[in-house]
Length: 188
View 1: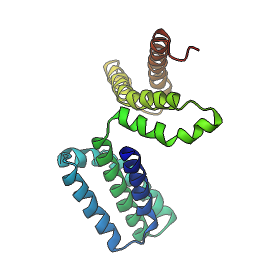
View 2 (view 1 turned 120 degrees about the horizontal axis):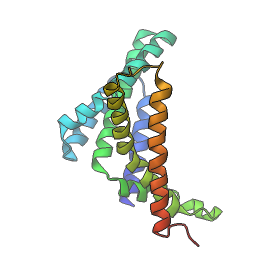
View 3 (view 1 turned 45 degrees about the vertical axis):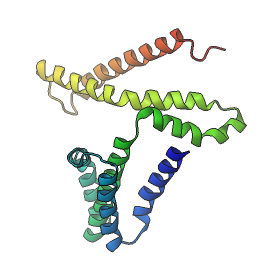
View 4 (view 1 turned 180 degrees about the horizontal axis):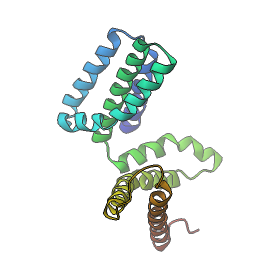
């Protein structure tokens, strides 16, 4: 129950950042993020490094907002996104995959009224979150293989690059399916 409350507070906090006015509240949110980092004993350098990894997305959003809105509003949106990404990194450092899957399973428990198996939701969340680092590694390997074969990593060669990546992805999915079948998961 503690993790469910923590998750719901995280969602409410992240959402509220975008609904509050562009003023001193932003500074309070940034200070609160710093406070949460210190309380949860998360490595500040790691959080900053991981938060900066989403900087291209934030800059892209900023540029799009500059085209559609004023510069001041674009800056506020960029700052709000940075704060949300920062608290997301902090949250991800304080919870593991299995705990998050258990939390989502608990949140989906009302779905049992519709005869939906929440254990399957838990397994899907675990597999999905566990696959992300593997997919990142596979994409990096495909990129390195392209560099070794003197294939430039651009839009023109995307068909070759993505075909290798998706073949690897389908192979991984097949392995997961076979291991779940071997363990008897889903058999009636």
